[in-house]
Length: 388
Image (cartoon, rainbow, N blue to C red; front, side):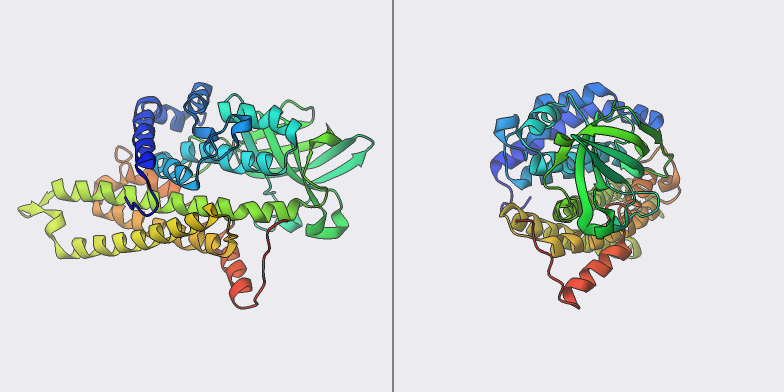
């Protein structure tokens, strides 16, 4: 591991996390993959270990550690062969909780961030809608202010933790005629009247509860507005940098794990009197995959380092997600081929890794949308700026 980014303390944390995952999580993965429901006790154990508080202020129970502790958490979660479990954890810790931390006032943080860090409450982030996935500005969910309340109507879909979470961070239009300049961010409890959710049946990420959520005259206090009214779009765009980098890191870690597994298998599998890692066609294919993975990994570490220093890296994070998720799909596809018929069997991990990986170029902004965002920055000289 590169000492340029990781200290001895980081590596001690990595080993502790590995041990925890093998002891507390791995024995339950197959059950959760089949049920689509991650049992509550594991969230509280994550909280007890401090894993949800790595990046958050000590005032609310966090540890305020550098971003490379988060990198380690993301990488190790990809090695337990359940993209759904990993997604449930990071969607809570780095999608929902990021908005609570950045836009929530002290009262909201006390009510939601503190129990999120302990694992007592689970959050989800609700942006994507049935009629507009990557088109955030085209959302139709509305929040109409009535006295000291807002009334929310609309729907969201493809929401990770959308069924079993305790609270929802919701983007809605408070001023529809302003387009993307009329979006605001709200927080609300799951049991608020008018909120309903249904679970979606997915190709991969089977352990996570991806939901479609409906809001039918949901009335919440005006105090549940997070940040300034009509500033939701800049908030969302600012946090997309972290989300995209997270998905890039997930992708390189997933590909690296697939390569490690394939390397071991190829060293043990015999054909024509020798292990298959001695055949040039397979060796060279493996070398290409490894090179592609390592280039993404090193780039992602560089972007993480810059983000950790407070730089605005929306372009670089967008590139990270675009290239790393494509790479992971291609590498895992080839790793399944290395295993031959066994790669196609559910008794081996590669089939699930392939299914889980396919979400990478779709979720958090499709590759097509990301290419257009990059084109706007590098061809049209569009300058995205952080919220001040």
